[in-house]
Length: 224
Image 1 (cartoon, one colour):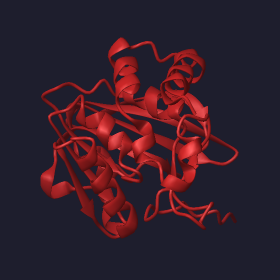
Image 2: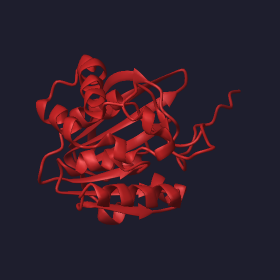
Image 3: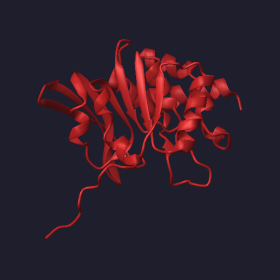
Image 4: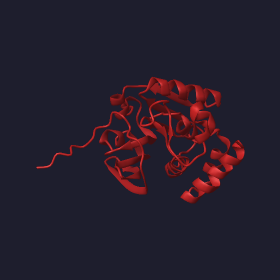
């Protein structure tokens, strides 16, 4: 496989048509080696427009999101060089690496030890030094990191049924959170901004579907 041609085609045929036009994001995607964050058995899928399973033998388990989805979330978050970012759901570590190239500090939470180890190694191999990978339980990850709040930005690298108020409270005023919210067959990527001490604004960005993050409560489906 011609890796650089595959990377170029990924950007021009998948990412740019998805309204990712921020040149700093496109340049980062052209230079950061996505293939280094894909399990060896899945390397052929590194630049394909699909979710990539991260644990061999568990195709329904955690996945890397599609390149276009990662790119669009990164663009919409508009992370600045002085900012502190929290990610919930480290997965492969690729989103953490993207965030790290734009932020001052990234803390990322992962409840699967095998993925935390894989992400640390991939980040180290790519010289990404401003990411702290923390192993937590699923329930702990869903609560965020209130002891280290407030954050300038929070990323949920997976889907949730509803956004917990506890996470929104961990944003600074002016801080942003991106997540994929809802239930199959239609979920929506959502950007939430804390506009005042007790006020948030919300914008739905695009429709997509993503695997559930573990540990987040599901709303009751019971009806009288």
